[in-house]
Length: 223
Image (tube, rainbow, N blue to C red; front, top):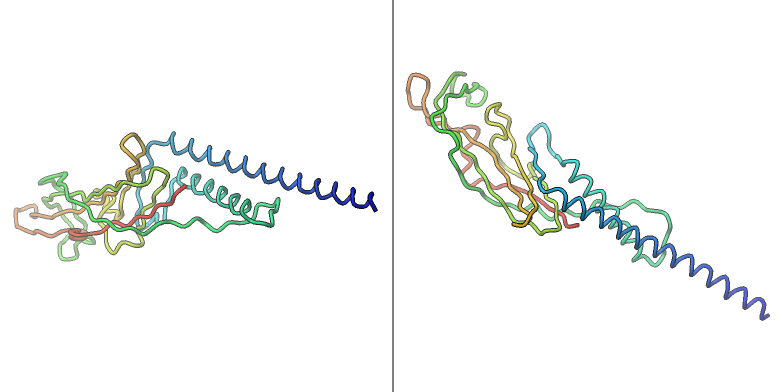
């Protein structure tokens, strides 16, 4: 009887030791992943790109790598909190983005009385031709938590201007900068005021839209 009891105790201790070892390995692995994520965040000072109707939705390689690391960390944390600890890494739902959040911008004239060839497709009321125009940027920047990565939610915006006004590609440019001044996410789009035709007749049309009051949409996730 004593032998049976001893064997039972030894077996229980053995399996407990294995469980503790696996749990410690997961904790160490999670810490390593967090360290890698922190290294990427600190070493990457600027992430920039453009989201337009051809490329949406879009994440840079750096953003995707952060997202993958975050998913692995969350998966391991869930396993550590699970009473039934398994050695197999189970699939994890994508982390929740916080948003969309909406913010308006402000206009800055970046070119004045410049000659641009405007296609008739951009303003069906005007023939394709050269026009005298003013170009405006519509811009905003938001402060994000230091431990976050942002994305632009173009699909959640009711309207937007050009990401490239020389090629008339519609979309929004963004840049996320991390540094001593904080974690800043900037968004910019452009509009064109067609003032006159080439012979000086007044036009005063705005393409692609009058962006007054336009709201940028963005989301972010914490890591």
